[in-house]
Amino acid sequence: MIKLYSWNVNGIRAVNKKGLWQPFIKAAHADIICLQEIKAKPEQVDAIIDGYTAYWYPAEKPGYSGTAILSKKTPDRVTYGFPKELIKKYKVPGDMYGDPNEEGRIIAAEYQSFWLVTVYTPNAKDDLSRIPLRHKHWDPAFLAYIKQLEKDKPVVICGDLNVAHTEDDLANPGPNRGKKGFTDEERSGFQAFIDAGFIDTFRLFVHGKGFYTWWSHFARSRERNVGWRIDYFLVSSALKGKVNAAKIHPNIMGSDHCPISVTLDL
Picture 1 (cartoon, helix red, strand yellow):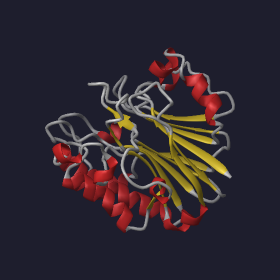
Picture 2: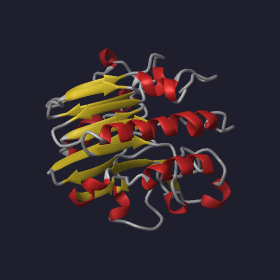
Picture 3: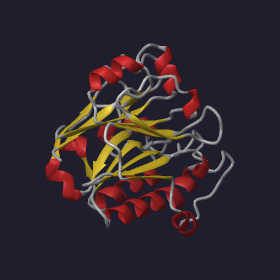
Picture 4: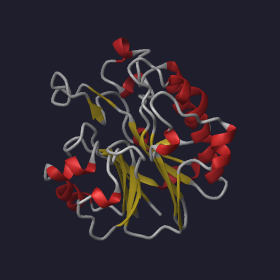
């Protein structure tokens, strides 16, 4: 068995400063931990990660974005970002907010029987100004990259995908339809993974509403569980029968997101 966690920490230094990092590490008993929005460079991280080898991919812009993989077992190979040929083919551009290829958004780690990819997908923004990037460039390039890896071995994808896939994945779908995180373009980008055979692991075990991974800071949203499920573990169809458990951990505090986990029989 292998247990994997994914967590958008919204600043690993902030979680550690709150005294919530070490309790999480001890309670998780994870073999691999994937992080998004680390918002720090390795030399700035004072969180204790005993027992893990850390692979950091910070954004070039200080205090912004970034991902990491903490692994007890050393991967055979680790790569960062999109391959250059996919950036060129899908014209993954910079925009008014910066170049997503310089924001530390994707790490892929190769293990003996699978690839693990953690991702922090660009936010569409309140005015939807990053929808063209998402819909025409990023989402197609990301799917192409995953399919490329899948030719070699099955893939586990995790992270903050910044989209609620269905109406069951957010508390208030009606008033949020067409807004960031619940536009047709973003949802179709996620659906393309499902159509390509990837499995939303949480939905193998739990159906219906009320299960969320992100809550606004406003109006006691987390306390009232008025949230969104935008963090996922997806696996190649070849791994469907290997998924032993998939969970959301809303009681783990420290970020506006909560961790998610999956246990694989590998």
